[in-house]
Length: 427
Ligand SMILES: Cc1cc2nc3c(=O)[nH]c(=O)nc-3n(C[C@H](O)[C@H](O)[C@H](O)COP(=O)(O)OP(=O)(O)OC[C@H]3O[C@@H](n4cnc5c(N)ncnc54)[C@H](O)[C@@H]3O)c2cc1C
Image (cartoon, rainbow, N blue to C red; front, side, top):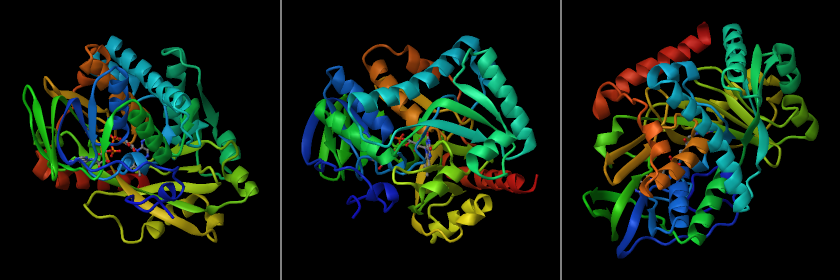
């Protein structure tokens, strides 16, 4: 029996015990009102409460209900934009700071899990594999760059034969192995953050969708049955932002991504397809990613869509990707299939900003949010408490809006996405 109020998924069915948080009813006040109870909002709320602020967190559904409770659970260093490109965009000093913060983000996830004793199947190692020979050459170069220029040695390049040995197939051309990266059960991590925030004094309200708000010196945030007056607001709605704040909606594009979970596999199969129990992601534009769960299911992520609806048969939609790589799993039962909505930006870097002096936003992690959203929340907390250096380094990365803004962004994006996914298939 899964957690009530969550999308049906393997994660909801294997979730730790959860406290039920009340619905907001009536009027209240806080220093900060956080809108959205995923990693961004929970981390911000926790860090703010630890600094002594009074915090109200409003979640439309349940904490961890969004992408944070449904994702692939990969926790990796680095950014989607390469370091050299970042240097061109923001200069060497800021690019180096962004790199360092990506390392800090993974350390932060580990530290929070340890400090708050969060039981979430945390394991070590992420392997990025090259789906094409030229991707392998690029990986070899970027690994050498990270080692030589960034002085980072928790990464190594693996030849095709080594990758085949680790993954029990012959599909990949090489790989970059992030030995200090990690993977986890994301919903249990989110629930653990919520418990920590609750204990630190955050007033969490579930089933409390923000209908609208009035910003200003003191903001007023309105739900169906209550109101919060607060000095600061954080928008942490990511792919589920909808029409709540049109000034930032055009910076992100919500896209849907899907995962299946097989029945538990026997130990021999697990070791054959994933010798070292790492999380794996390939280099296709619409990526395939997989890992083993705590109870030895293969969790396979693959396939996207860009509409407001999920495919009617998610297990069938995703299974065909899995079978391209592991045809021997054709007899294995698929016990779960689910989807989630994430937000991407045009440059694939997170979008952090101050929409007004006391109105913050952190969103658009582009598939890299387990670590960076956790860090994003912490950086917002630091910025509100007067130390904005790190937040500002992210905020200064130029984030172009999607052409066509909020209304017309779909047709162009969908055409672009389809073009790149076709390219994956044919070139
Ligand atoms: C299928 C899938 C696989 C992914 N895999 C990975 C991965 O392996 N590694 C990785 O790093 N990242 C991954 N991601 C991305 C990652 O999950 C996100 O970047 C991250 O969870 C973002 O956290 P968030 O708190 O910003 O947003 P969310 O977790 O989406 O939280 C936003 C919350 O805001 C709430 N909300 C929205 N509107 C309102 C409102 N009006 N009032 C109140 N509340 C509101 C929503 O209900 C939601 O709970 C994946 C995403 C998906 C969907």
